[in-house]
Image (cartoon, rainbow, N blue to C red; front, side, top):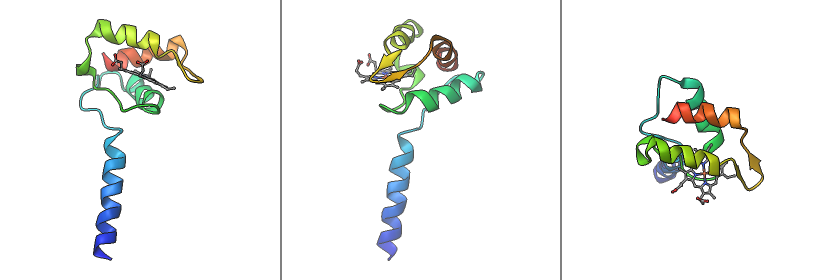
Length: 84
Ligand code: HEC
């Protein structure tokens, strides 16, 4: 029983860690929220420090449509501000 609880905790923690970003622009909570909700579905959430602002700019363009998900320009701009 004790191990079962531990296992559950382990699953809960590893499940959550996928959605954590170490640093994100806290001045724009709206963009941040959009980033968490729109960008974490297909892959892990990349940290803003992993790319330079110019790189984020290009990434935003290429993430416009992946699969069947379309993220409109306005939303992407907000997300971009929220990250960079
Ligand atoms: C429908 C799925 C999907 C969504 C939604 C999505 N991505 Fe991606 N993303 C991918 C795939 C697939 C790759 C890897 C292949 C590629 O780069 O084309 C990727 C790669 C990336 C990379 C790595 C690029 C590199 O050069 O290493 C970053 C950063 C990224 N995405 C950011 C974002 C951001 C920010 C958003 C939200 C605006 C987002 N993604 C939304 C599918 C998605």
